[in-house]
Image 1 (cartoon, helix red, strand yellow):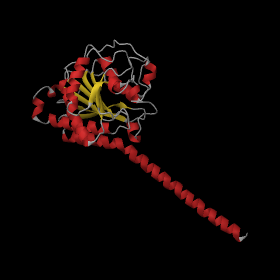
Image 2 (image 1 turned 60 degrees about the vertical axis):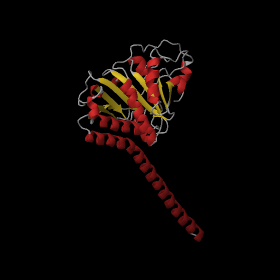
Image 3 (image 1 turned 180 degrees about the horizontal axis):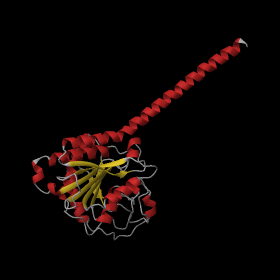
Length: 314
């Protein structure tokens, strides 16, 4: 064997060892990144338990069911009787993180929850109707999207996966959406806020492309939303007029199906000041609602190009 052959084989061996080391290093980095991403929802769960430990008298944490990955979607119930559902109380619901890449929604929902619990632990509980309310708060609906910092869940936009007034579909391709739709049947909910980002707006139905975007409750929606928007300087109006039309969304579905006074919150930037001011705005919204759902929630307009708009991104 010539010296050149020996040199070649030696260099080849060194190169192969270096390549293997590089591959192992990349795999380690990738695994570490995936682990860190996977811990994001665990951090939220820990924050929920921390709040429960601080306010055990008013909180309970429960699963609304397991999603397509077998992960529990956790909700917190806040009430003077949190360990059991009480249909006699005024039901309110907040759902955050349909879209996994809108992390500000999680920040807002956790902060709002904390401020709400401070109200329960204060003398305010005995003033007004706070003590007559029962809250359901879901900080993360799209767990896999949140862990991966991706908008969709398994390639599907969760906030286009509901039945809509301008599209003929049953909705619920995702198990997370089916679970939430089932939850809405368990009791009467009066008010709802769903949390997104980042438009800096408070909007209400209708959110579809129709010849009339005003519901029969438009004046009521406009009045209470204007009052809330004065606290954080957000734009407000119908979702179609302020954001853009998109059918199959949660916000229209819960109003159309159940008469729930439904608000789409689009955070401005999710900064600390934005979250703090918007917490006051959303508290004002809930405090201004009637004690019962709307009975004028029927869709009476005519849809325009509905199928085209149903697929548009929010």
